[in-house]
Length: 139
Image (cartoon, rainbow, N blue to C red; front, side):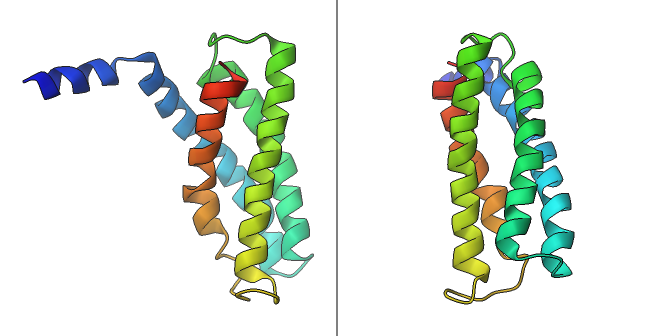
C-alpha cells in the first residue's frame, strides 16, 4: 500500500509533470532534428556532420521556445539566466549528437549507415538534457 501511495504522490508531483512535458516537447524537437538531419544525410546533400549541425540549430531554437514556455514554465530562474544556461546545455546536447554521428557514421570509426546516430539521439541525449535542464537551466 505504501508503494502505491508513493507512486501516486510521484505521479502528482511537479517533477513528474515536467518530465512528461519534457518528453513530449523533446519528442517534438527530436522529430524536428530528424526531419532536418535525415534527408541531408540520407541523400548525401552534405556530410553527416553538417546535417547534424543543421538539425541541431533548428531543433535548439524550437526546443528553447517549447521548453521555456511549456515544459518548465514557472519553474524558477529569470529569462536572461535561463537563456544562457539553455544554450550551454544545448551545446552539450550538440556535442553528444556530434559524438554519435562521428562514432557511428564517420569512416574513421564504425562507418555505419546514416541512421545509426538517430538511436542514441533519441534515447540517450534527451535523458542527459532533461537532467541538466531540470537541475540547472530552469532551477
